[in-house]
Image (cartoon, rainbow, N blue to C red; front, side):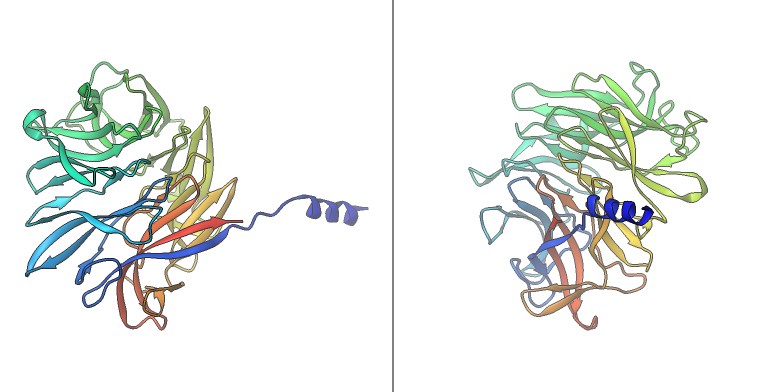
Length: 398
């Protein structure tokens, strides 16, 4: 009878096998030859982004007439060929582009001392314009830019005094500060604002450090919080410096936020173990833990989450190889990463596996369909000759 019960349970319990069902080379950069990019071109530590209609964007570097040039590249989801939509010479830097579901982009152009402003690429007009000029605002630097479907911006602004604020902006009403460091209107003061995320429902999520302005020490308490556009705040999780009974010894600096309100973060637990959590509907759930599901180490890159609650993140498996992991309905799977064979425009390639030289480069992005884009270093299939860096699109299925 016991055997019959066991057989029934095995037959009646679905086992979901997650796997890569589609692999596509989006672009490749190299010294002597490239695909969809000028050559020479470079994608070192570049983080590509993808939206729900399959548009893909990323930054790249090239040389023209022996001058260094930075560019923003975009490929529409309905097309197979992409193009650079913005390029600039000189010692300027470009932030990771914020891409909304209309195909519009926002990015910061800056140098080591100050910003030239936030620029917007309009995919319909096919032009770039300055939409936030530092001369008109009390902020000299911008970071963690988000762009929603209404082309409204959220960013972290740094004042000339060095104070950070989270700022909301639209072209009709201008800029509005949601909260700032040293803000006494909240129950506890914020000494430092880390990266914040913004969704299409007007929800903001991020990590903050508590204390008076200038109190940045690790002994200060950290919290994961969410806000609305009026500044109303809810605490998702606190570390043990805030609440001695908390499970959390600390948090990674970046969080992820979906349009359905999923907030994903990585927490540091006891015995130097780290785990990935999601908060949704007032419930906090552990998704992945170091030492389980083939995961050895959670890497310090922001996880990503879509409206369906699918989560992707970078990690190192038990064999010491960097992989992109994917979690859906409690199942965690390593999808692709170092030492894996991939197709290229030239020949069969392999994602680099070399001690001290990560084969995955930069952060990842995912849309509501579960399409993921990532940057990697390519070798030939024998792992010897360099093929440069490449942006790939993968699709997850069951």
